[in-house]
Picture (tube, rainbow, N blue to C red):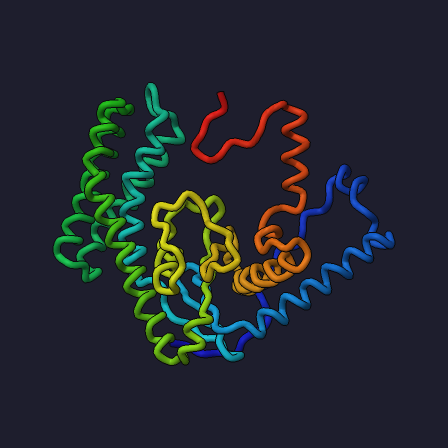
Length: 322
């Protein structure tokens, strides 16, 4: 597990988009006293957040294939997955890609679809040829050959006929579902086993107090699906409520596991943890409710205004408006 000092220069961010004409007319000018005052607040908040982060116990971030631990002013790295995770995932995507590509084809193939299928045919053939060199278990190897072979057969059939029928595509994709789900299971097992080995090795080097303070943040893609593997794993190993097929992340301040949506930047992921702690403390001090700042400050007013404007009221998840 690699060790390096905390900090260091972050990757440069892309230059911001120039503001639109409307934005320029709405926003306060930088020299406006209120704009200067607001920036001073932001600076003070950022400084306080960094102070909170520096005094927190150990924290782990999972960002793609890497686990990052910050503890006692040091930074450690360990794997969250192995290459096998990506091998299974790449093969799984082939029948899914073919279904997406062909599902809307009604008549003869259009030129773009035919070109893409021809390209995919070459890529599938090359990938199938490489399978025997990857050291996969016998059952898994046979499964990958089966999926790529069925995909190649479909591509050849569709290119020869220059069309695909709905029944043909449905028969193909439904036949792949057992192998797709088994690949998904093997991918999940690879990530869980790899993360567990890394986290347990770190925990053995912590005191009981540090293990009790340990928190985690999971870098999830935008609109991440419920049931994120890393979020489920950390919920169990850190003693949070394990929600499995949960509807959404529970933002309670006591939670030790957070998801950082669309954040694959290490400083931003760790800042989320500090923000979570700081907002809970601030919210408790101002509103007497730890979770108030987990909601938009305008949220309650917006509900009242919209309820009055449209003569309705918010519906709990899973219910429908009559």
